[in-house]
Image (cartoon, rainbow, N blue to C red):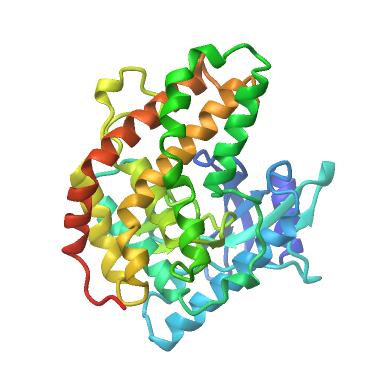
Length: 370
């Protein structure tokens, strides 16, 4: 790898002498490394180097273009605000000396370079303190991009959060029942069919001009935020490959769905599965003050429901994969996707019961709403 990284340093004209690299194990799609370079004054500087998974991102130039557009916009806004932490609050996307997005290596591998957020770290755990900071980071991301025309972005993963299509795909594979598994999931199918109103909610509101498309991150987990090592303050939102046009609820709902579940995503004992209202409130505490003066009342009112919608969507995806022979999600044990689907359905049942309390807790943090 050392010879490859030296070549990449040359191709991207990175200043300094290559010293070594470290593998970043978090992330399930791209291969990510931190490389160290020693500058002439003896100091070291790090960069992120990634090999993009072109099986997932079939048009890799599009994900780079999206990232360049949104980071340039955020950079301009932070400069206008004279933010002293500007260089740590937005990543920089590098191009080669020939102006290319990637260095193309062996086997047609696409390698790219992104700035490293210095003196920072990220977290896998989801304490209420971390969730409040993560909510602030993703809310700030929305706010800084509120005037960016989302239609300029490529749709890098078609129908990623098209909940209605996820339901339709489920019904189609259930009808075919190619692996004779439908008889195992009749209760799950019945519950999802009874929840179809949620699946169409965002589309119908958008068609009535009540819910606009915005720039959404679409992978709002805590480990996609970099925090200051000393203060814990949120810095840059990273991993921008899934940035696309979407609805604000996609980011809010998926963040809460993942972080506020009291159990693991594949928990078999469903009595352990519920929504932690304190973690929900912590994320809302960070997120809502950043966006409440720029989103509409309809968008705000539907944020609690977005947790339900995104939970149902993932349940449908897991169940679809189970009925389809487990071809998409990696499975570590028999019936893994079935356990995942049942866990999400159990979470959705609990979320639905708690929606009134979720609305009340969210309202505490609203500043101004149009």
